Length: 253
Image 1: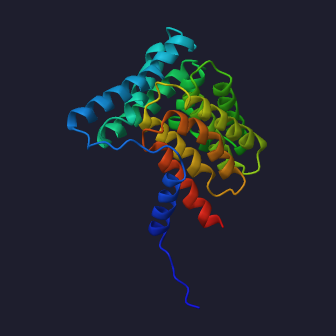
Image 2 (image 1 turned 90 degrees about the horizontal axis):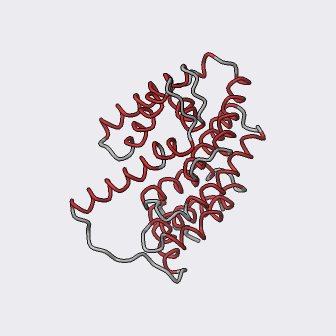
């Protein structure tokens, strides 16, 4: 019998078609967006990012005159990072690390600012593995238990969990924080203000971070599926996520 090889691209298209056909909802067909519409979407996304960083810091952050300026500068640079052109995004990334480090040096222990510091300014090479695991766990826990919005809790838990995993794969705090991130993402997907582009980015990160684990991958998708189709069915976001999930699941078989 001749075995026919199917390319990954063809298989992905087949699975995506199946995903679209297997649901009662489908994305609304729309014309190509104008330059003005794209600018409006970018501005709305930036407004949301500022609200969920600077705005949240003003609402629940650990503020102090000695570090407020640096903390706010770090948060503002972070908010701009994914909505500016690539060259400016690189500069924003450097500013995030620099300002977050300065705030940390002045005593800032705000969970979100410290999370940015751990991601972009912390020098892990000057610490032992045990010290690093402890610090990443503390920051992940602080974000999970903070008053910050769900999308920031999601990233705080997942990114700290993945860093712990890189240091110590069988660490139980990795599993706990990564599992917590599922719940925070599901809750974030229920928030009406969440831009589709941000929902897509968060879901993609969750799926990519678990796709090599046959136990965690299905659980991660199942946690996001219901709120995705409930709140984003008129966009491509849930269908792309479902297609990605099914194609990766097919390769696991």
